[in-house]
Amino acid sequence: QLREEYIPGNLGFDPLGLKPADETEFVTMQTKELQNGRLAMLAAAGFMAQELADGKGIIEHFLN
Image (tube, rainbow, N blue to C red; front, side):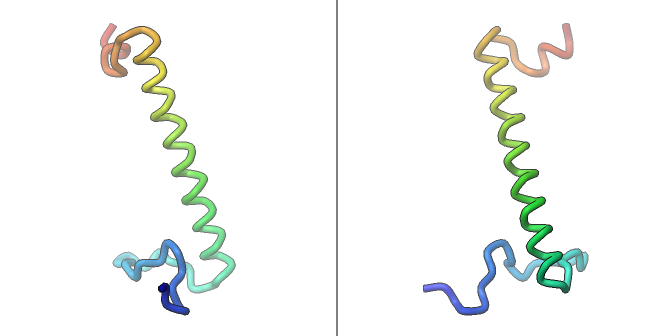
């Protein structure tokens, strides 16, 4: 059972004070974080696909 005041993504840890005070700005920041995470997952999948395609790791591509 979740508490009434619980908001997903708000763990109460904000040592730098980056969390916006305004509710709309907070929702916008949540959306941006989700999109950033999804983009990072796509990039990681691309690295893995490249390695499966030619058998070389990402570092090996930069060295040769």
